Length: 92
Image (tube, rainbow, N blue to C red):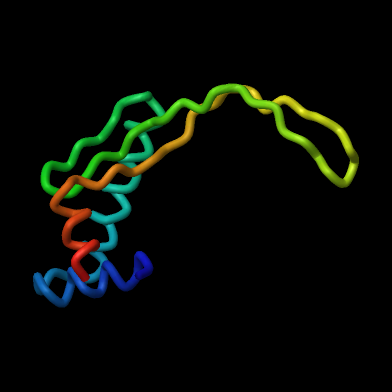
């Protein structure tokens, strides 16, 4: 499902103008990005959590050049669904 499909579905269910729904959806995504970039997790009760994970430094190999490189420690965004969300998907 794409962002446009989400906007269409919300607009159809609520009767709100698509432009207004798109603004809200984009504002939500911007808020999540802003929070995660400030190392703040976002918790949505009954849905899941957007969290910042830390990856440790590791050594990797470039097989084609036969060299070893070090990938430094870094942070990545992640989503952790709540138990009810997992159970809904699992039971489909």
